[in-house]
Length: 332
Image 1: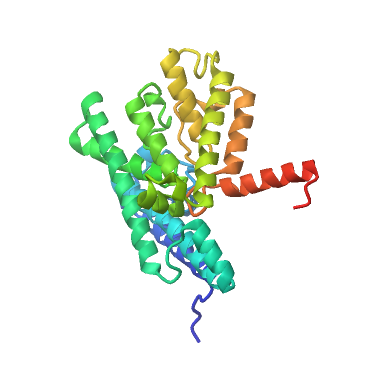
Image 2: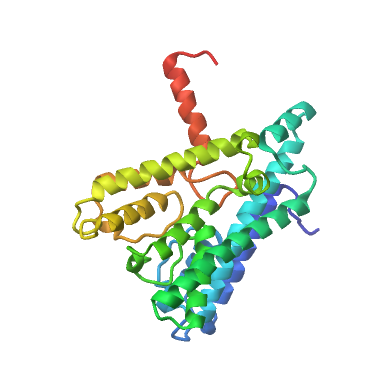
């Protein structure tokens, strides 16, 4: 008797396992490596898992070890992984909501401005449209900049722009350079689109969907959206301020840059740790207080139903207010 996954958690595990195994098999092909020898099983499996799970960890240099085909497989893997995480997380929320009582379901839907509880196709279509639109805009900005300022061929600019745009929105952290994006440390026309893509990807589909519908009506935003946006803004400002201050005179990071360069690089490093994975300065040369700030930001992560990691910003705020209430002796 054949076994089929029935529970949403089983579907999630099986889907990601299949994606990882398929990506691993493709990366082991001779056509996937620059040498033409094919990647060893461990290297292919690690890279495929990192890509599908949008982690960004690598054991070989993405830009030189893999061929164009191999890099395309990696790109497809973290695109599928990011799309799957946002879609499945949203669908799981709908499935869980069905198990609540009617009154609780109506309250939850009103508070979160949720989609129709039964419209699975709308969730999938919404994630696809939002993802494609944002990735296209980020890619266009990067391609134009690479063409105009770095004397790249149209094909090279398009390839690098699309790769890094998709990687940014999916919070994958994969780059085509061994030194990440350090060559663009003072270029706002590269740093800002990447950082914006990471920030939007970390908000989560429910927030992005609601902003698309009611961007000009903040008073109509759900509590979930307000908490996610407010906490994200607070963490961006706080992370930028702390890292910029700690690294301002560090000769190995922000020290040699002019004031605008320091502010741009500090903002980029403050925006990335919550799940972006990119960097424009050498993290190994940062001061220890900056590492601590980075650890805190990584622990918190991004929004619910997003590709970001961490405990999620809404969980962080609930824990924070619970601790404050406990310290004040509030009974509720």
